[in-house]
Length: 96
Image 1 (cartoon, rainbow, N blue to C red):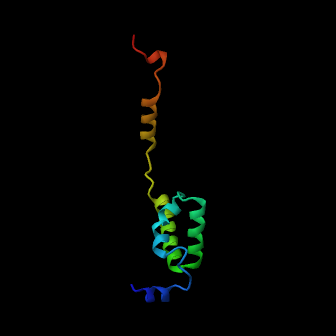
Image 2 (tube, rainbow, N blue to C red):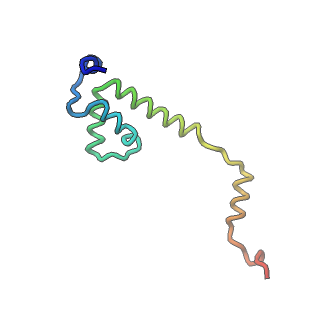
Image 3 (tube, rainbow, N blue to C red):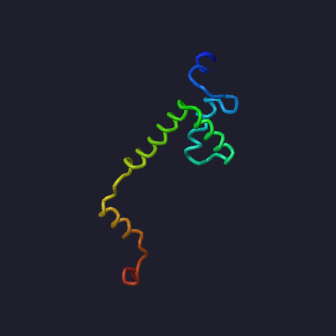
């Protein structure tokens, strides 16, 4: 995409944080792995850039859906069997 087309899509200044840089940091932002200064910079960019905010919003919502839907349910019988295996032996169960 040309610089002209890019500037037509966005009505804010990209001098501080270009979209490409903001989007590269998006996963680190969502994971809470950025410094407070970097977080603030990305937040300012997202506040002013609707295309980047839409990407952020999509990724954030996707993470919520995945965390809710992608949880394996473990049957109680399996939990009980693992708990029995992990229990320390009692005096009555130790072979002599």
